[in-house]
Amino acid sequence: MDVKIGASGQVRGNSPRLPGEGNLINVETNPRGELVATLGLPEGVEQVRLGEAFYAIQGTGVVALDDALPTTVAGTTIWNGNGANGKSLIVTHAGAICTTSAGAATSWKFFIEPSIVTSAAVLTTADTGVCRSFLTGLTYPGGALLSKTVTVTDNGWINVGDATGAEIVTGTIGQTVGGKLPVPFIVRPGYYLATATVAVNATMAGKGWFIFYEVQLPTV
Image 1 (spheres, one colour):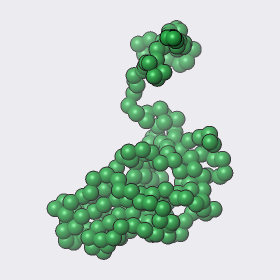
Image 2: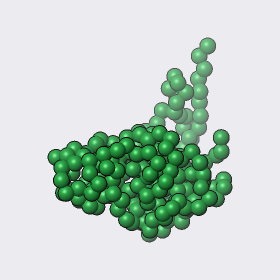
Image 3: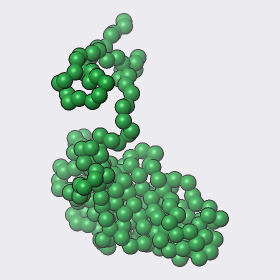
Image 4: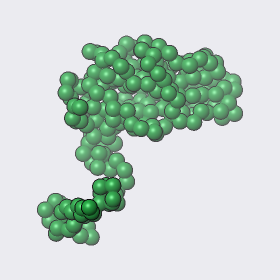
């Protein structure tokens, strides 16, 4: 039989108002039970407003792997150093910025993998990178820390973003690989996310970077 699903919401009028200042209205769902709604602001604005959105970039460039797929060495990792049952990192973007030119025609590719084991401390070698909030004036208060040239477990790397072609990369400091992840990675306390870049020579180097939300999530 057909079932009509109803709910109550608040109408805030033509200008935003605090909860409780509006009138009640029924909201609707589609046949799949999904709420029919339209975002009033760009994606991520509410996380920025709540002080939950951050970006991090490592301080020292790391040489790309020389024409070899990544295995047990990561160029950059982001480790969740929050305590047990603490906040998780929801990583939505990751990549690398070229800091040292290849000096010759080359390609450049970006790979990423999550850890399968925890670490009680920031991984060796810790990196003096920076982490900043997207909310103006707010310093980063959480436990995420960066590392460079880290020995990791090879549990399956995947390529992220378009590969950069040889005709573009030659001598191009500032070129970026990576970007928005198809699906975000959730990094729970004690775990880390590893990244690596691959080039056709052992000269090109870059700094890894991440965009993430830091939020409290229920444990499944």
